[in-house]
Length: 453
Ligand SMILES: Cc1cc2nc3c(=O)[nH]c(=O)nc-3n(C[C@H](O)[C@H](O)[C@H](O)COP(=O)(O)OP(=O)(O)OC[C@H]3O[C@@H](n4cnc5c(N)ncnc54)[C@H](O)[C@@H]3O)c2cc1C
View 1 (cartoon, rainbow, N blue to C red):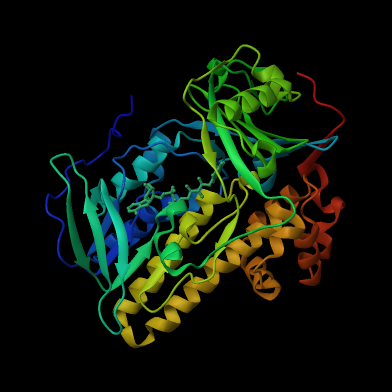
View 2: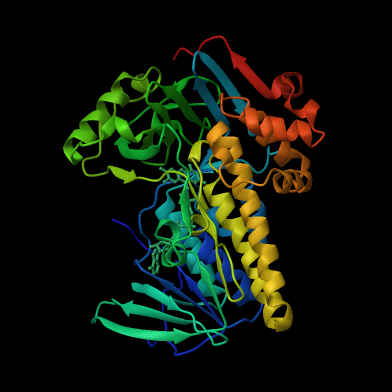
């Protein structure tokens, strides 16, 4: 049973206003963060969210970078109070090699990664937007955005709140599309570009009760020890793609990223049978799941596992988070990207409200930063076919601006798979040759002869 977060300020204003300064579409991490930033500046912001929160969401592994955004939003204390599972790093078994990476070696000892139940985590962020002054309406679905030259954008919505169903419109000065995979604006503009290659991937995941987990000590532990011996996120390649195991407080999230062809033509039951058989056969994972029970009905599915958006922003709109791009989640960058994008969008909107004559420039600059980030993430996670739509010079500029430990962690993490050759080439071209040398990783990347649990 999902319950609203204890801190929640659940009262929603009844009537949706006919106008406001900014409409945010979607209340995931990207939308909640953007709405919070703007509301904290005293800007009149309305957020429309399709679901009633808390709502389920995949993507439970958070890398430590998210804390700096949580601090900026003023939500770190609420997150800490929730007592999510703290993770120490990752163990990656990739094609005959096994690596261990610990966040503490990169200066993140007191700001570790987390494994979070996303329904709860996202709910904390959304309630924080409400507490910051954003007007949030759940169960309101945005149908489309009407742009007329020189006029305010109009957002057409369907209000599905409990006491009925009605349609309405709200006009605003700026729209932030944070609708995730739905990508309301990108679909409306037909600007979503799926990264294709010989191998096209999809995500398939489910949840297990009573799974063991892999600790930072490289031993398996029962889930009851999860707050005593911090886990790692376990990643393993296998013949059809790669697999994750993320231990949460009461269950384990397990997922496959596989070649689309592998389950072509399969119905739901066959997909689940394939998923469960794969989990039962993959070394290490198999042992972690030995005492575990699959939670019936918990299967999730996501096609188009990587895409980007050719039209991230215009003069009065911007897309952020999964609405702007999505990258293979192997390095757990999705939530970080959403929070980073939100910062950029809020900056562009705030600056444009203050100086409207410059708005095209502000939105262009924010879109540029957002696209750079996804280009970097694609290069890191996808290897050669991650190059679609990237501008190498912009990626270099972005990397040069990263804090040193973030860049180090990214480049060292990329060494754990065989997909980083283009990222490393760009880093070398940018004068960071020493950083892509295995010597540079030093004892921050432990190569294990074998992993036995
Ligand atoms: C298989 C898989 C594994 C992943 N693993 C990780 C991971 O380990 N770590 C990580 O950091 N990231 C991971 N991600 C990515 C991460 O989940 C996303 O990047 C993140 O949720 C993006 O946040 P967002 O706010 O952009 O979108 P979302 O979280 O999807 O939020 C969008 C919101 O918009 C709402 N919405 C949609 N359409 C409308 C509409 N028309 N009107 C109103 N509201 C609407 C939705 O209901 C939703 O609440 C993973 C993703 C997948 C698919």
